[in-house]
Length: 226
Ligand code: HEC
Image (cartoon, rainbow, N blue to C red; front, side, top):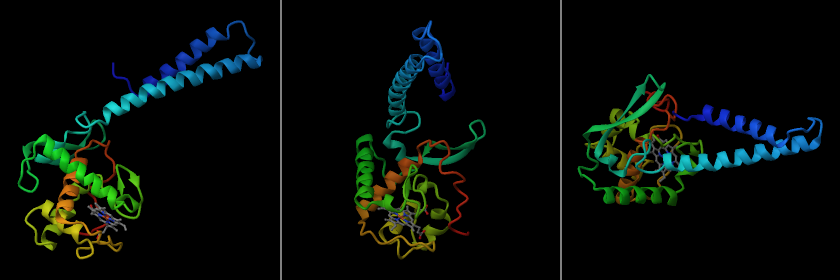
């Protein structure tokens, strides 16, 4: 049986009612002790459910789980397709390869690069303006699916005179002031080429995470008019 939020809610409420009924047996419902016991039982069961759900979430958000792919995903083509059954857009990984910077990364190399990208992002406090997986500020676009933004292929490859999408992203990250595409500007954050490449790898990996379709309506960019 697949256990979803509905099953968990029904089970916790059911347990609270049954165990509460056992513990308050023979007591009048106007007796304050009756309500105290129900409150204790309810809180204890919710506490246990929250602990179980926390471990369940940790397992589901771990690298290599169903939704969060292994770092070697950066060696593959990542597509974003509407899943009519789920009702949201879902990343589709591969099967064909699409090497990043023309290189096939091993598991360790890919992990090292992604971790470096994360450290660069933390060191420049990108979240002061952007959101990643919904966390951060709302001044600039969400970066969760930035890798999949059609603007790289439609505008930025030509604008930065690059051959590939990743090269265009590196150039933008190193000189966002030079390749502005919006009324709000991203400042030059003094990112060198190695750092920019690591950030691009991080963003490609992040784009492959199944986020239940977040951010909504992605691909109909309102920032850029093509
Ligand atoms: C002071 C605010 C600010 C900070 C800090 C900032 N950005 Fe930006 N960023 C912006 C704005 C504004 C845009 C839109 C600019 C444009 O399109 O010309 C943008 C655009 C982008 C884009 C293009 C997104 C898309 O899909 O169109 C990427 C990628 C990006 N930023 C990455 C980063 C990274 C990585 C960092 C940290 C190293 C960072 N930004 C820090 C303001 C910021």
